[in-house]
Structure formats: C-alpha cells, structure tokens
Length: 371
Image (cartoon, rainbow, N blue to C red; front, side):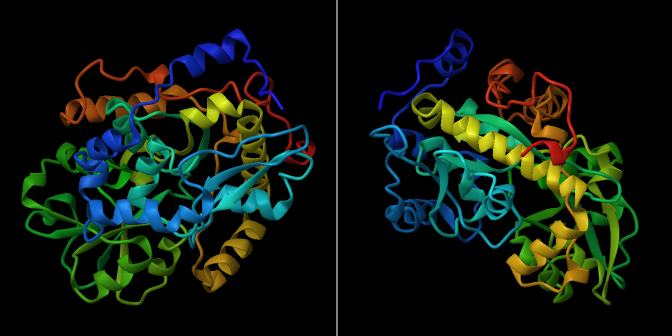
C-alpha cells in the first residue's frame, strides 16, 4: 500500500522534521542534561535499553504498511505507570483503526525522549523542556498531542519533607538534598525558578535523581531532605506518617509548567500520518474519559501499578489534548535563561503540531460523544 500523500499543511510540518544520523544524535543527546544526568543509568544504560529492550520491536525502523488493512505498530514503553496509551488500549479506542501499540518493555523515564528522538521508539510522553532540548540538539521529533495538566486538586507533582526536618520555607533548603526523577525536566526547572524567586542560592542545594516510585522511601530513610514526587506515587507519600507535603507545582507556578505532552519521531510522522492521527485521536478520547471519570481512572491506575487505591493520586488532562503555546513558551524562556539553549535556537511553533488532532479545529464536545 502506498502511504497517503501529504496535504500542503501536513507537508509543511513534516518538511520541518529532520532526520539526522541516529548514532551521531545519540552521542549529542548523551552530552545534554536530558541524558547526561541519568544518575546510575548513564549512556551505557541508554544504549543497553535500545539494544535489549527494544530489540524485539524492530527498533531501527517503524512498521511498514504492505497493503490496505495491514496494522501499523508503533513502538512504545511498557512502564509501571498510568499513561493514556495504556488506557486507550484498554478502553478499545484503537479498535476500528489500523494502528496498534507495540510495547517494547520498561524504559527509564530519562531515556524516553532521547529514544523517540533517534527513532528507537515511535512515541513517548515526557515533559516539554526535554523535548525542546532534544529539538535544539537536532533530534527528529515533534509534540503531536498535549497531555496532563495541573489542577489545585490534581497537581502534576508534590513536594514532601519529613515532619521533623525543620524545613518550612524555601530558604531552609540551602545545604539540603532534593530528590527528583530526572534532570532537564519540570522538577528541576520549575523548582529552581521558584527557589530563585524566593532568594535561594540553588548552587547550595544538592540535586539527585531518584525514581518516583522510590522517592518516598529515600526521603523517609534520610537519604534526601525533600522529595519531588509525581502522580500517582505522590498520593502514597501524602499518607505516609513521617512525611508532610510542603507544596505542589500548582503552588509554584499555577500549573503552567505541568503539561506532559506526547511526542512522535519525525520519520514515523512522515511515513505514517494516518497512524499518527489514530494515536492522537485515541489519546484525546482517553484523556477526556479520565476527566469525566476520575474515580474510575484511579481504579485502573491502582490495578496497573498494584497500589492501594487510597494512595493513588488522580490525573487531569488538557481538554481534547489540543496543544497550546503558553506551556511551551514558558519552558523555551526557562531553557534560554538557564543557558541550556541559545536564544532563538528553537521557536515555539517548531516544537508542536495540532494537525493530527481531529478536535483541534472544532469546539470541544462531551467525552461521551467522542467514540
């Protein structure tokens, strides 16, 4: 089967996506904060993941459509977390399409965007600054759908300290150790921006990488002094007797930095535009379902990650998963001010596209109508 010819609007997006050497790009990404700060994983783990975990998914190329009716398989991590891809799959939102997820095993969070950027996996969901940094380095990827959003009652991440820590205000964190799930993402940049606004010398703070599922225990055992934990694991820390919540990211920036979008590799977009539309449509349906059924969604999360329901934090998603520019501009400005990317290196419009989202050009409809 021949792939559908792109319309001029699609051609403008896909022409902008570049395809650099995967080997050269991987070396570049390793030098960035997005990969260089993998804690114990390092570059060897990154390469190991691409060779071992993704090998069974034919990681070096996307699926090839041979004739009408063939399924397009897109490579995606199978991580112990809540994710709209898993939910869309479970709710049957890929039924009636020729597109299906092909899970390639567990991939550590800091590796996801680098592997999307090289095409080792086709889609991934991680925070905006990681995507911007990868694009600035020449990675061939683009945001195709928005993702989670921060609400006061459903924050993207929460900040915890021990009750006996004596930490009550930002200045108290100087000389302390903060644990978060990766450098180069929301936990680093939102936190540093807030702390600087309150007169804190962030150079006097020790930042270390701790996976979300381990962050509570690391804090309780005094290996860190403050833990930044994302949902759903943040709910368990809320119920820990020894801990107290200090802030949430909603307290820090009103939720502007909390969008976790879905990105796709450029080659997959160019070769399988209808599959990208299928994925984005399924994601949007799933996100709207979560917003309309938060308690049912929590039950599915609890089952997937094998956690007591009372400890599972809820999620909220951008309506219809339509990407807007303020969250992207927020991080472009931060990355430029932090000296991570040169001024003008990445334009906001180069980071995302809504052209594959069928709800982007029409008013939002109730979730039940999007079936």
